[in-house]
Image (cartoon, rainbow, N blue to C red; front, side, top):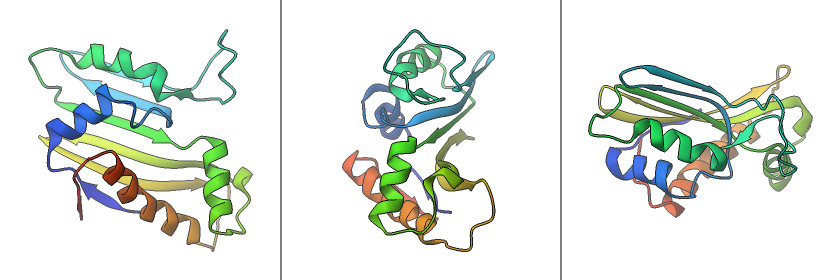
Length: 159
């Protein structure tokens, strides 16, 4: 697990909310506390969209809705985004390092983004269906996040 602080909150949130940098992630959950609390469960109940082949909604489809919840003069007091890689990207990541882990044994490779008390932090995590002794995939996920943030022009500090 990797913990990063994003010191330029405004720029990082702008990237998250107004660019396509995070659009390939799937949404597990989003919570926004403004004058009311918004909870978005990213699990697809049913869809007429033939492009949806996964059980979670792509962030790309929810980003405009999330932005509309946040827009205004008052900054939310709390926000949490739980995003995950698609099953295809999980399999590609495992394959790229020759991991013996079966991608079907992974329930998610998560990116947790939390804004609280004026601070924006990101953590990585992997959820498995059962215990795994091999941590190579976790190390790779921790290695890839800074690369992704650099490509997205998001500054960070490793904590």
